[in-house]
Length: 192
Image (cartoon, rainbow, N blue to C red):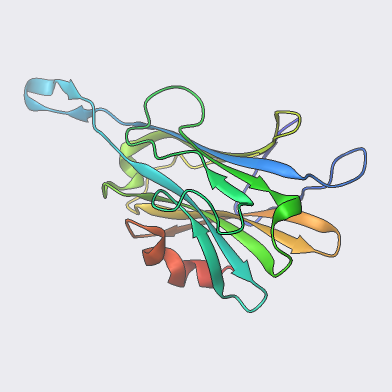
């Protein structure tokens, strides 16, 4: 059973029967809102959203990043399956796979962000969501709906944090502006 996340809500990633999740994927999906053209005709827009995973150490320092220009973390524990330039198709348009058991011990937080590389704001994007899935079972654990008109073009979606009990996920939902994750770092820092 999936949990629909609210901004700031924290969810444990421990399995119901005991033990923690070892492999998760963060899926991102979206559709472009049709734009009214001449004479009232609808015209499809091409919107390129990008999912990124930022890996932070205990001091809040960015240790590594996975995004469309670096599809794999240096240690191999985080893998982006590829850049979707349009959002066309059903389901997840971009996926980041994380092998939590292989994340180096010095990494204590993974922050997932979304930004519009093409620069459109979220008021032009429909059916946007991010979700966390137990990759061993395929079960959706949590979903964060991003659809909601906004004049921003980026969002700090969620963080997965390591603690004494294992891993937990916190929905952040902070709005930001920037075409790549580097522009979002000041906003991300406020949520570490």
